Amino acid sequence: MPFSFEIESTAGSARTGVFLTPHGPVETPAFMPVGTLATVKALDPDDLTAMGASMILANAYHLHLRPGDDVVREMGGLHRFMRWDGPILTDSGGFQVFSLAQLRTLSEDGVEFQSHIDGSKRFFTPELVMQIQRNLGSDVIMQFDHVIPGQSDEASARDASERSIRWLARCLAELNRLQNAPPALRLMRAEPDKTAVHLDYAPTRTGEFAAQPQHQALFPIVQGGIHGSLRREAAAAISSMHEWPGYAIGGLSVGEEKPAMYEMLDVVDDALPRTHPRYLMGVGFPEDLIEGVRRGVDLFDCVAPTRMGRNGAVFTHEGRLNIKRAEFRTDPRPLDIHCDCAACSRFTRAYIRHLFVADEILGLRLLSLHNVHFLLSLMRSAREAIRTETLEEWSREWLLRFRATSAIEV
Ligand SMILES: [Zn+2]
Image 1 (cartoon, rainbow, N blue to C red):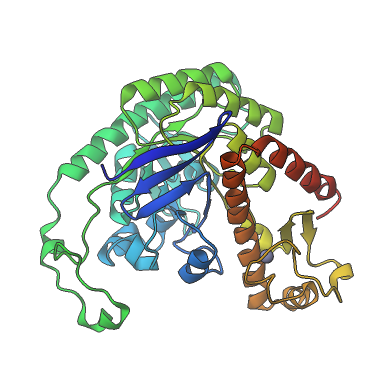
Image 2: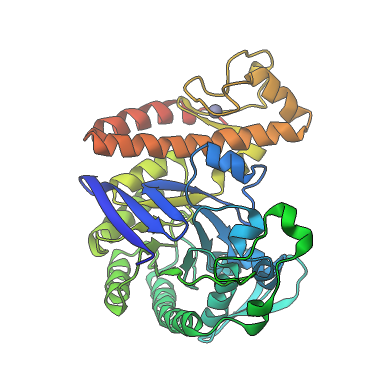
């Protein structure tokens, strides 16, 4: 099997494990840096490798609009296009269609919307979203789902959850059709581009230049808003439909209160099979990662570390700080004295503040580098705490220290 998940140790609902993909293993629990447009903003693949990232995320909606998933396929798929050899997960675009795009018309068939870039009319169906992700060639692909605001009432949440389950069945049927279809003749005959030899664009082992992936793991998404009974029903319906390689939990951290989110995670933790990885979508603040790990979540992603970095906000073991503040003007310390990232091991707060205030690109890069490293390293510590059966003490101490100062910073 090209995908497998092996649990190594457990502590309550939390566990460490290895999720194996055709592009290598992912040690879990893991944070996945987000490269929406096939780039983790301001970082290159060598940076990500150096800081220990295993799987990264890209977005089907954004890449479909720009440069076009056909372009990515032509260039040999996402791994080759962006020069990332590790595992890649693509988000289906459900969240973007329902949050970014304008003028939506929802029908059972799919969603018509206007591109947020040029206003052009688009129509996403579960089938098209599978074709897009097939063209991108990511390892893990997500179903197309109907995403609703965090505090939606039960009737709207039920409608969206049930539609997402019907769309899931269509996604699975389409993926099976695509995986069994012979590769396009044009691609079989394509010769490697001689001008690209210096980029090491050799043909694949099968001789296809722009080969399509043999295997992709389709993850269903458990929806249901903040309604426990809906979440339970969705988890039961999804897990009885097929043996999925993993499960995603969607529609959280979208405006609901934190206790409601943690309650839903408890519900889903009990309702989903423990044998497969669970991915909590779009959640990535340090405190949420720890609360998620404690509730049996294995994979996380969030744009927060890079987006916050671009606003001058920094995660540290003592809470959040904002580098813009005047107090850092002559501060000789690194961003975080407990961090060993490439920014903290060389540069002072004073220097990074200067770069940021002067709008220098290096400032944004160093802040992103530190924040992404911080979350990857947090997950390494969580794995260690699970293995050594110290998760409860470790997370209690960590959260106390982090929350004590975060409240007054930023
Ligand atoms: Zn650092």
